[in-house]
Length: 278
Image (cartoon, rainbow, N blue to C red; front, side, top):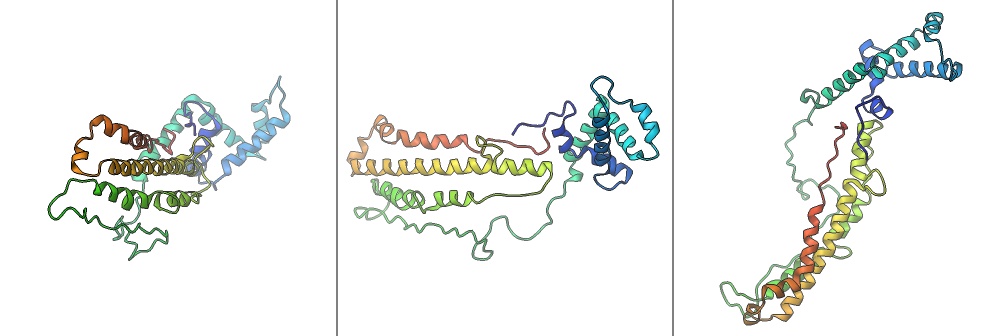
């Protein structure tokens, strides 16, 4: 989503900072009064103007002031704060000062709950269940201490990687849950920017949701490749003597492509979105 251009008066910027409401608040008017009055002025203008003469505003405002004083007030405010260069700059400056002033930001009330949620004490209903992984007990040939062999490679590939990848397991199940995410924070501009940052604004921009889904799918693919490579290496090098023959070039040949997939995961999570348009 393109950022708002604050350098000149435009509808996106006017809407984002609720410009008309600044006059309502200053005068103590009900919300929407200034915009409704200005819209009424514009309706009159569009009905009575033509491309050559427009509307004689000075003559018109004197003749209708008694009947529609709010129209004239709104039009004068618009001229001084929207179309006037210095007025626009001050309006934008005041708006940005308010949304970045820490005194205007109210943090959530303190509570004693930890950020980490213990599902056994505070169930979230997410349905998440960690995979059952059997602990590594070593190779039958190892009687004590540390044994250098490929049994650990097989265990890691089968008991860890293959239990979190593939259909029905944690990575792809999380993708299915992300498909259901569709927040609706509110019907105002900054809330919509936040919503689009999460779910995406276009087919090409999937937001945080799309970024996370792509990352999980690619992580799943990469870890499957790592598991396959580890099992191949464990099969080709069954003992210490054979493992010692494994050269760096051969290791890169076996694991290279799977490692590239893991390296590619670093491209995710880099997008920054600000709701103030800066």
